[in-house]
Image (cartoon, rainbow, N blue to C red; front, side, top):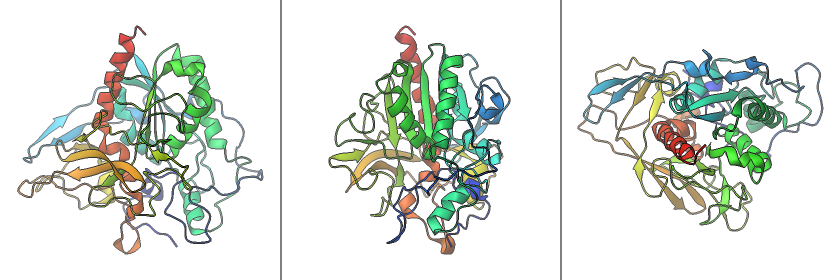
Length: 413
């Protein structure tokens, strides 16, 4: 039985970055990336269409006191161990929008989640998207996602936790319906940044390919930030794989483009069985996973501006000491200068390599949490730093969205 030993976390928060991805299956097991059969309709759960005109079906809505309005106050720990407090201020008059789809976090004991906002959804949006409100209005729909218990059951070849919906497209259809509601009632010609992680990025990749790429809505696309999935492109090219006319981003002033990456420690590159950082298997000939480094969109290394939330990351390592002899009391911590990120190729993998600029003489930590640890204390190296793909670059992503906003306005929008 697959078991996680991060006892301080609930099962939902354990997979706060996980999606339909899982460790490589054993011989004879279902193929990696496959989903359980969802062909037969079942009584009981609500599998009908959601009404996104009902704002209770949104995790976050601009101007509302909800999950995205959480306290983002941060303790900044400098390299010499000194600290300061950084306040957060949202911009209620931001000129552009962000549309966020969260990763696999639901701990509902079902194949797909219900539409009730629970702590796991509130926590992950605070970690991965709420800080973007400094630069954009943030919309985040609830959707009936493939759940953590279903993921566990699939990995361990056990019975699914309850009846399956009539279609495995139920989560995508929810997000599509929310997107169409947003376009019809809220967009009004504004530019929009799509933001997702893992299962959320997979949903948004399909949304871009089906509803935006080459369609009228492409005119509103500022960028698509797709963390923790292998967005497929021809090797050495910017477009032509998953997207036909949406290229990869190479500067924050470039509009209508995509940022995609997966993260691994420099000291623990993806092993042969890793599923992040390379195209879905079997890989199409001549294709690779996109790697656009948020710390340096133009290429080469750059400083990753990390923001770690106590509610998830520090709970995973309760003894983790950010700075010797001091307790962090704010909800978030930032560690400027600690992390350098670079896109690298290793065999079939293309990913962001995370280097730590540790100083043994400094009272500040020289390490970061973020690995997935299983029974016996082993690290799931094939997952890399998937759980903290967003945390690693949160400050960079805020800066990027801010620069994109300026570029959008400079175009006369």
